[in-house]
Length: 262
Image 1: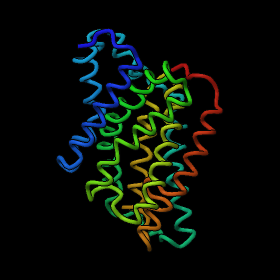
Image 2: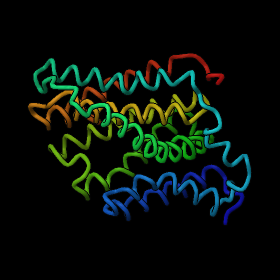
Image 3: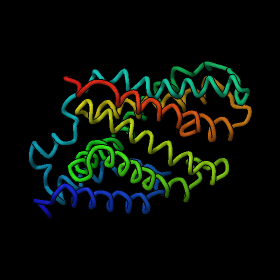
Image 4: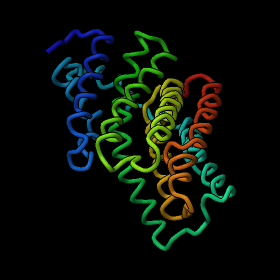
């Protein structure tokens, strides 16, 4: 137990533990343990390794004690809004056609929001709640966003490369650069939301909105005529249109005012 671990050391230990867990559990329960691992690693850090979790201050730094409501509309617009625009573009260009909403579209959306909230919270409490504040004290604002993004990419890689469940379609030499660049863009966007609001919740809301929007549109509203091009290369989770839109959204959000007061 390292009760006085400095932020730099705590960040490095967190990264080592979460990446080792990712590599070891990518095939366990179709990646469920991996999905939960950022939050589980936070608990291990706070309750076992540094024991910060036995004080109120240790939990306060996670940014879960304030809602940051002022930034929720920006979080939704910059994620679900980007997915909607990307979907409209692939339909306009002929790579998909508008077919929905399907009869079960409402049920699908509710399911995506419920499960997505749990999974997004597990990720964001690790990346933006625990890791980012500790990196900021060491590396500063911009570099901390980039490093969190690199760690986020590395955390995904065992799931992408070793299993058939995530981004398995398409040419890996196209998909992986698009995926990595998009994750870095999301790290900048969510990092700014965390920094501006003083809360992790806007990043959680943005993460949920992105995941639910692209999945719901693809399953209930549009049908791709070429799924690889439409869902992997252009729109979908981390396609080119999503990358460009998210990058632009991060720039716009970063230009907004100082930290929210709620």
